[in-house]
Length: 143
Length: 305
Image (cartoon, rainbow over all chains, first blue to last red; front, top):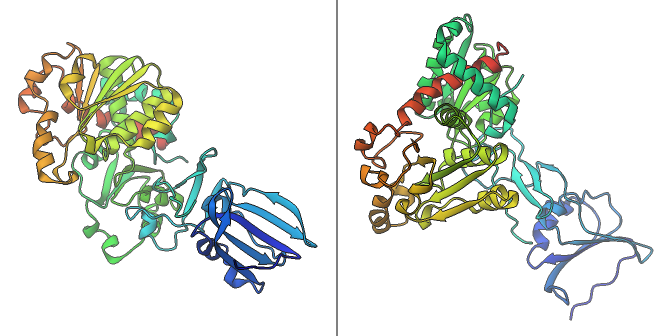
């Protein structure tokens, strides 16, 4: 069993579907921050069997809006002085611009120069997003 | 200024108003023969089309306006790699309104974001074709007298048929007491998101059947579409299934006397030519009415009516 120490101040992204941690690391652009990040894969979970986690040291001003789009079942724990001061699920933003990409090869975004990929939340219950141009549903790779 | 990109850009009142204007134009075309004098429509067709492009051009000419444009990407600056955004910025200075067909889904929406003139989506890939939907609604209203209380059968390729998807969405959203019957092979059934999000979630009745013979007697409208060979996974399935979806006089025997047979055209072999003589066959009338509803739309978007 691998042990990774607890955080004093930071953010834990818990209950990431197995195999999803690297994608979330990439979408959050954590490589651009100086803080220490632990990527935990295949951790045991009572709820999920196995799960991934990300532990981010320090309360960097990270935009977590995209999490709801990628995996709405993630739990966000905000830790201060070693204590969880906030535990919440990610919000589902109404619109997401320039973060996720439309995978439809017939979509205009596949050829038009300078266009930003844009998705709209069309169903709050299921967390379904559709490309505003071609209306293709965004398929989560994980979650 | 407003554009028409998706059939759902129009609310029910706007659709009903367009149909009312289309009716007036159809009945008294001379009253509108110079309303667009001095106006130009740009028909920007990045892929071939016969009916839609000529229908837009005929509509503008009927209104006393002029037409400019191109009929394939090869004869436009798209062949040199120009973006849709740049093209429309330029065209905005040349014309008063534009109709765009493009193989990429969402291209007319991109155009609308960069245009200073109204943009009409004349078909974007397998996505939307709102003026076909308006044509279909206008045809049903004119020939049937109503857009409510109808049992409508869609037959053929219901998986990829954009005209079917748009008409189902629009009727489901705006009109009441509509029942849908989807007649298709298992390989070409209506997409599950339409069944779930548009029909089931709104308690709109529908059923799916495999054979035309099983459904035709109940229908007020039969909307035929082409079953395309290339949609099938193998030739055997195509050969096995294609004849089930060919409408013949024999199949029409059990249909209602006043059922309408519609088709967005082009027809290949899914409606036998013998059916053309049947008074219920209205697909050529449907293509004719498409000109008048486009005339109404052009005038509306130009703020002339």
